[in-house]
Length: 601
Image 1 (cartoon, rainbow, N blue to C red):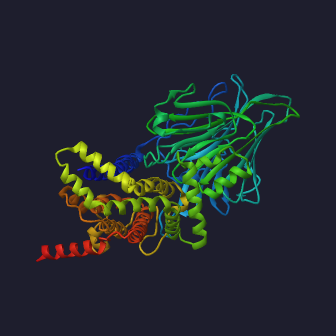
Image 2 (tube, rainbow, N blue to C red):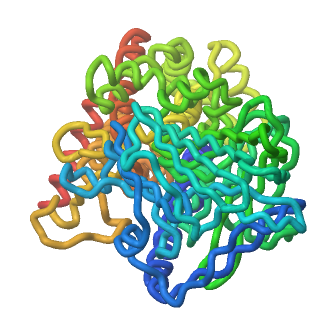
Image 3 (tube, helix red, strand yellow):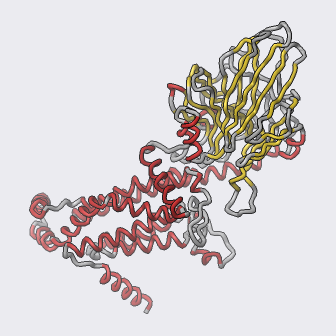
């Protein structure tokens, strides 16, 4: 029967969406976690290879010698005198030996929802297991013998503390007639400004190239989903948004100075760096100045990933110092903060540091709407509920038309059954008569699918918002849901925590997924019980299947789906009552409970 085929098709499409989602996003997450565990087990035995030189035409950048063993973070921090970093958002230090910005932690963010858990540590010093830092060089032309600052250079600082109110100046004299200075300033959020200058104190002159690198040891844990980019990222002038994963860099073209990856030359405007899900480190050059950018992966016992920035060469001579200024963002990808920098510093498309995806035009406004209601209510969960209502209101005309069409379909069910019985042996004639009936009664037989189809882009956009925005991280709702961006932490299979056992992921069916399953079951009971056995089986199992599939989704998404189902039931009830169509809900519920009682007896 045609309506059976339509039902099977609709269910198959819905299942394809959710199964596909699990395959492309859920399984890669689990695989990424497995790889992370394997990497962690190997890190204690890893060493650091020699770093290749900087890109031609400049001379080689100072290399990092391979240590006999990796140091702990504490030992690495103690190996150099340091300038303390203390701002409202950041804490850490700058190494005076080498001048690296290599110790950054975020004051506002912690590892877990526990208020006593440790702060997120982002940058760590060279020669540690998960080293991640920014390094700044001057490179000389080939053949030059001028001594330049290196990783072993001990800088002198004019202060032992860097704050948002007071910059720090590092100086070093090479003893060959050149004085190097580095002024490091930071605002009250996440933006550093690094101004390097060279003065000729004697008669010598030199041509120097400003060169900076964000360097990371070992591939970090990445979720590995297609919904989120993690790795190298930048807006490189006219090249526009450029994204390269760690694996893509490792498989990229061979670079002249070693390693593999990609090079981009003569870009003007934008930024370049490395992004994680919630955090990023990115260089922002002068937006009117040309620069070269390189994304590099260096294979070895320890893998190294670099985002390099090279600015135009400058000549330094007596009375003519050379100066280079660039900014460095090291922080959380807060939407308001990133957008603020994009506007105030006029950084080309800096907002794309946050992966809004292809549906940027819808995803970001949806977040902004939710954020508005969050500031109004103080709870992102309530904001989700309000936005769901607004989405329902926005699509009410379409849903109203769809439900009205469904109501008309139910009203002509006797006529449809009569046509099928009359032309049971002539399927072509049967379809012709049905189409004539639809035309006479002004019914669209596929209109009932529109409410589900309309939900899909909203569902995906909301998933994107919950998944990529740090504002949703550790955002509580009520009760046991203390992180809307994580799955419901409860499970019926350990009696919601009464049994001291943590079920596998597939069995983490929490309270909200169960509530969602109930609302879906009630929604199906709004319609007459199908006479076809196949339909009956599908309707019976769909809420169960969806409950298991959505059990591993973010709690915020399950809450949205539950609330949306509830609103849909109320909306369908009102529309059916208005059109005088019999509402099957109460009868179906009563029959279900009677059938359950008979089975028990």
